[in-house]
Image (cartoon, rainbow, N blue to C red; front, side):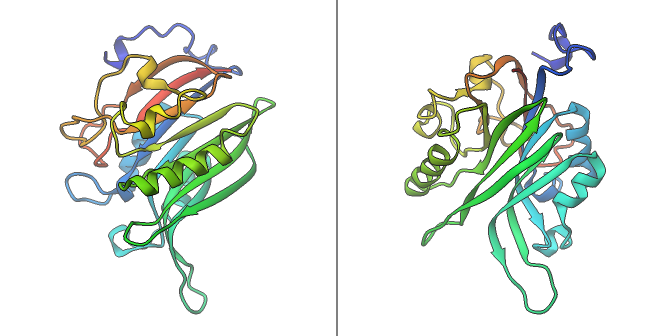
Length: 256
């Protein structure tokens, strides 16, 4: 169902107030679209149009590579969107002198107050390094623990990331959100093993649209999971004409 065709009850201006939260997960492909063009503003426009309160980002470059012109992409998105940001590198190369390190990994944009954050690397021989970013965000007089990750391809690194998610997120007694690019379909154990205690938001809402590849999405490999502290009001895959990334983002509306 197209987003404009869905009923808006509960999420028009006033009712998207204190008790609601809009969450997005987006693999932004370091701002390079399917046309091969680097354009971070297109990514910011996709995010800004949805007006999210929290955005988990994958494949973010910070002074990392000429492919992104060595820009601090998270800082730039913070500036363009008027949100706060925190970053967790999967890859970090330190440089001599006063040059900033070259970093690549996961980011979180948010509205609220950051109470604490941590990055949990998962590395091993023969596999691209991965990490789980966790952040405790204060919103509406409540704390929510958010985990953002980009799941690896090999079974062992998936299991290692699942262990980190379990240890760092599922032990939290309050509201929990976990999101990111899982690189697998919804029936894969890497997804189904999270339920319970977490719910795959789009699965619950019956969303069948794919998120990858953007130009002809055949597979849903991007996810938002939430704990029982939330009521899921809606969830959808965002249509992104021109495909500013090779993924389409997913969004949901939650109530406390």
